[in-house]
Length: 148
Image 1 (spheres, rainbow, N blue to C red):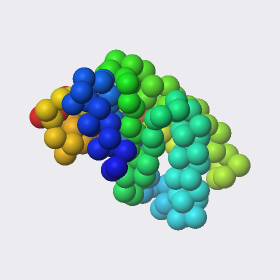
Image 2: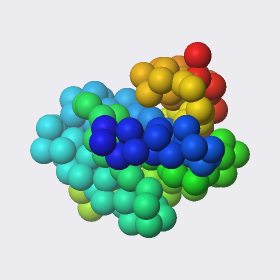
Image 3: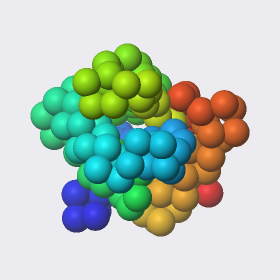
């Protein structure tokens, strides 16, 4: 949250930035079908792999349960969407067979711009609304949102 506050402050000075929420699709079924140890390993591997794909200065943090918050300073919505689309593709093409035969992991992303004048909670709500739109669109997708 400290990093998000810093990016928010930079946005008040005119720097473009975005945040995204990532939800691992159907994560409860991963735990139910393969066990909590596999679920924990999925969370760890997702965090490691996606962190390795980010630019210096970007941040990825667990944001509760199977959700992650991405902070993408210096990017406008279109660029942030492209980054999240690349991350989504990376996630959906990882080979999980060594961890658990039959396991496949995908993610849904909601992206929101950090806009001057918008409160941090409104920006997170916009990303959350976009995430829900991604889920409603069938999951394994990236959607853009706007602060309320």
